Image: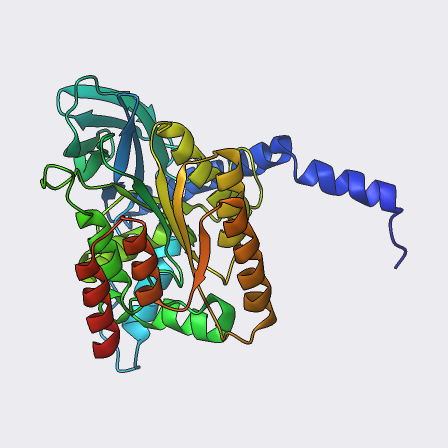
Length: 385
């Protein structure tokens, strides 16, 4: 079969990747989803509506909250096949029917705003919340006009303390949650065949994060305000509930999550995981311009490069960047990263490749970001794991 000339192929590729093409595909997908819903409602197969309010955050007195509206998931039946129910539940997270064009009212305290869900069932809010105090606040989303009664979803929104010594941005996969992204089929098996209670935390990381949250006393001996935690991952929003439960079960500090939508949107036919992370981290740096950040990631993906870019783009605002080593010390990737980290440290960029949570805790303690009790607790966790 004859091949297209290179310039024609390049032009065609550019057009297919353009926002205009993405908008067309997203629009078609939205219409197909609406037809699927209408058919299920007319046939009596529609199971009702669920409203999920993702943890949000407040910046410049505006609450940034994402809500999703979708069909109530069908629970798997009993099966004698090992792991079958777990696999069904995990797969159905991705197959949930989105509710397109639903009107959603978000309520945070006495503040209200209304948005309409997009082709994937998401509604994104920027709700002014003047005079909201620091800390966590309940958020409620109400969807009416679908079914006999309004459907309500509940969530939380955090307003970080700007007097905290720093904020924390953490990767998820292979930074706090063992996924094995570099292990191919092993990662797929962990994702599909294990429920949240069976998912393993990276040893010592929970104790490290609790120590960072606790911090060190101020000059007066009183505890400083706790830093807010933000979690960034290339994983799908479909796994949000599982990841949020994992954070709670494994005793990590709660925080908003920045996940991604694997389907086409009005701007992109296909998402770049690295670009998603870069944009999310940059967004937080811009959202809190007076704050310094502790960044935590792993060597298995693009975290080192993204964190270096942030340190250069926002000089002096990275208090510490911790990169957990994935794989052996002998791996060429880790060898190169270790040498590069040493060059960055000589420049004044505090990016460190660490073997485990103990090394990470000691580095943080040396910089006054956590106490020596944290180092001991991390050591105990590593010994017990």
